[in-house]
Every structure is written in structure tokens, then in C-alpha cells.
Length: 305
Image (cartoon, rainbow, N blue to C red; front, side, top):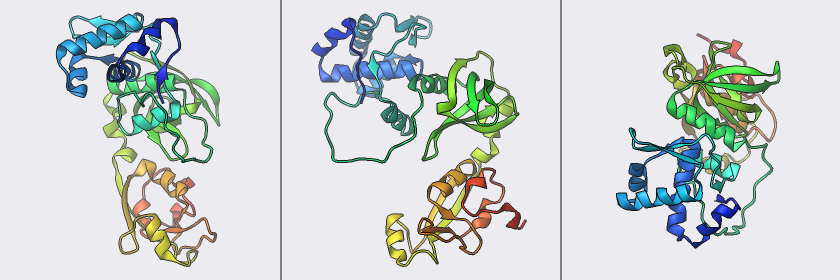
């Protein structure tokens, strides 16, 4: 849930209507993650008049005068260097919003205690780090980061990010790594500093040149023929049609999904264990994908050209 930071400057916000709080939250969210907001965006989002949008922006500026700068030429409000969000953002909920392209920045005033629980998850990324990366992606700019890897520890890198990815276990940013001259995934929780650079990426750094990302792979998943006694149960779990689930996934993401679902990727469904409830029927479709070392039972040497 996003809620208002407890500061003296924000005490007056409690007197505003629910609808206006929602609009102010949209302004705040846009400034934090996009770096800008305009009256046109407000009017389109909330189906309101230009005068009302102007008033909301004035109220926001009054509540957070150091957050926003107006560019007269572009008729757009930009994030000030002294920006501090007016609202606080729960990291997990915000990441879910970003992944589903929800940009209202507002989860409501009251929390409803739904009887739903979830297992413990890995640490979520620093939301301010994520905000900087999102801005860079939207502006198509490279970034300088401090990144800690398992192989080389902490060091500075330059990357050209194009997508933030949820692999089911943790969040990555995918982009062109200027050190290795290749497209790679970087774990967001291992990024401790981000600086947006001013230069323009080259053609080879464009997302369209990320062939593993652009390539779509058709996968055919079926209940495991040896480990599952009642395949109908698995068919219901995964919404299969005629005992088969057909999905299309990016080559760069295939390994993550196959590991997360414990899909047996051997040629003859050879993996034994109750955790292997699915078998990849068309394993040859994986040929050429690069992140398959984590796919259960996959041995690339067995593939035929």
C-alpha cells in the first residue's frame, strides 16, 4: 500500500478528498518512476478538465515544493533533483504494479484484511534504485551502476537497460552490458547505485538486437508420464487443453520458467521425483536458447541440428 509520509508539510493532505489524494498519488508516482508528469496525462487518466489538473499540480507543489520543476517550453513538470516522494511505496506491491503496467501509484486509504498468505520471498529491490532504472529505460539512456556479482564482487559497470524482469523468484534488469559487449540479466537487489548517463546508445545496444529477448519459443508442456499418477489433476492445475499446455515465451526467459515449474527437460522423461510434475514434450524447441543450464535435465549436447 502507498501511504503519505508523516511530515509536518503533509498534515493538510488529510483534509483532501479521496479522489484528490488519488490524483496526487498519480503525480507523485509519475515523477518518481517516469521523471515527469503533464496536465495532459492527468486529464487523460482521470477524465478531468485542464483547470482541475492545473489545480492538482498546484496543490502537489504546495505540499512538496522541492519535488517538481516546470519546463515552460515542454509544458511538462519534471522531477527536481531534491525530489523526495510525497507517498511511501511498498516495494513488493510497487514492483507488481510496474510489472502489470499500473501507474496510478495509489492503493487506497484503508487496508482490507483478506485471508490470504504467501511463502517467504527473497529480498525485494530498493524502490529508489528501480525508479532510476525505469526512468533510464523510458528515456532510452544508459546507466552506470555499482553491481555485486558472485564472480567478481562489487564494481562499476555500464549497461543499457531495456526491461525489468520478474523471473518468478527475483527481479532482474535486462540490458546490454558494455563490459562484456553482450545482453545480460542483472539481479536488481545486487545493484546499489544508479546514475543515468547522457549519451545515446548505439544501434548494437538496442533491444531489437537482443536476439534472445526477441526470439519467441513455443513450448509444449504435459503431465509427467512417469511421476504423475493422475494427470487430470495436473491438467486442471495448469489449465491444459487435451492434456497439453501450449505457451510461447522469450528465449531469454525459458530457463527461468522451466526451473520455476520444475519441468523435466530430458528426452525421455527420465527425472524421478514428485517435484517433477511436468515434462517438456518438444525439447528441440529449446535449441539455441542461452540460459538453459538451470533447466532441469536439459543437456544441449543431445540436441540435433
